[in-house]
Image 1 (cartoon, rainbow, N blue to C red):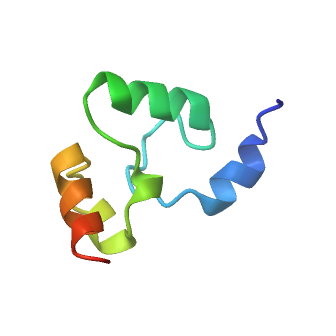
Image 2 (image 1 turned 90 degrees about the vertical axis):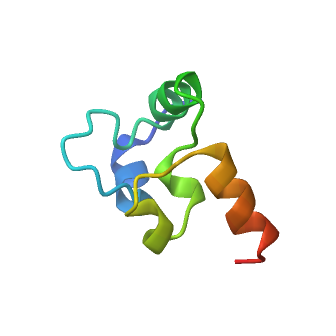
Length: 66
């Protein structure tokens, strides 16, 4: 599978501006999993802006049906 960086950037909701992994989903996911967290794309904008990308935050988001 070929990575479509420009297309990925168009839908990336990450607000961390100096991020070198924007549009490079494989690198982004690997990076965040190494830190025991999830990438911005699994969170809605209001949660993503907090930069709390922990599994705990994600499970709270999912369990509250948001």
